[in-house]
Amino acid sequence: MGAFCSGGSEDLRVISNAIDAQINKDRKKKSVKILLLGTGESGKSTLAKQAKIIHDTGFTPDERDSIVRTIISNVMEGILTLVSLVKREGVRSSFKPETLEEMDFFANNVTSETNLSNTVIQATTTIWADPAVKDYLQKNLSKFKASDSLRYYLDNWEGISKPDYSPTLRDILLARTRSTGITEYRFQEANVSYLFVDVGGQRSERKKWIHCFQDVSAIIFCVALSEYDQVLEEDKFTNRMEEAYNLFKEMLIWFSNTRFIIVFTKEDLFREKISRVDLKTCFPSYTDGCDFEKARAFIEDHFKKACKSDKLNVYTINTTDTERVRSILKEVKPLLIDASVGYDSCPNSPK
Image (cartoon, rainbow, N blue to C red; front, top):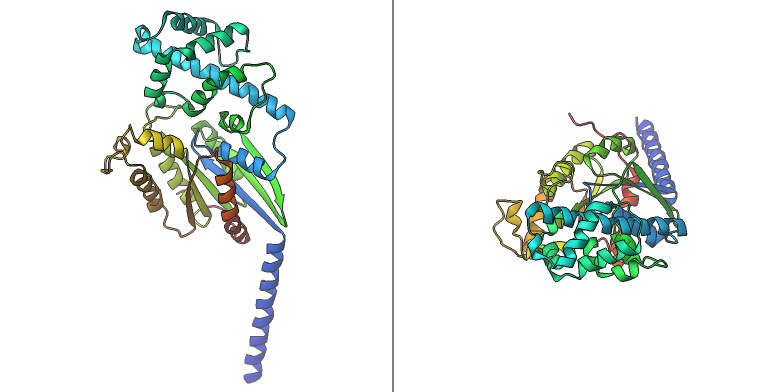
């Protein structure tokens, strides 16, 4: 009996050593797959751009040319939204006659895909030079798509509209393109291969997500803090923060054993907005007024309560802050590597 027990113990040691050896081997040759999820305009594509900037050589000339076209399209779309809102709300009398003239020109001759001409450049310059336009945009930020980048681009329109314009890093990060399909970005660091998978966040794009669900090491879920008083572009009535929360809960069901990293984005816009718009507009139970820290903590706690797992990390950032993103990526990499050892290769299907 003693010999049997001794042999059994020896067998267990052999098995244990073999498991340890395999784990060490896995750690030396790692493949980490990170799924970037969130609703439309949550900042996840900007986060993917940051990963590319931090770990790669940046953007090719062709990519930069495409970004320039996107930036100009963002400006055209923003002006067209302004023109439409002014007409719908009947506030034309607030603006200068020359501003109204150029607004009419936009309404009749410009689309989001219009190429720049001297006439379009001058019309845009004239519209933005009217203080009443700046004031109107400031008071109606929630009605504009990507209002943060629109204000920035219009403030820098003189340089952007030049033929030899070359976008800065900030210009690139603020460029807004609707994510469609699946975009993958890979980079190698030491003995670890990372794969970031960015998928479109709009409702119409989410049916494609399931194709990315296999072999996921971790999920970075982006939530735009500043969108608590805004509605979805898709249906014009669903609150964006509520949509993000419900989507987060659904993903927790799909990936019950997976490491989650919540990244609350657009901190700078949230800080500015919360001074004017009470969080109660989204959360009736919130009672601490227009206080940035208390409002941020309330939202963070709201999402944390939905997750029963200890595999959760939370960060608040401006996705255009490259050094802050670099710091967070450095901090979470060990978590991502550890998660990849036992990734949830077969996620749960919601019941």
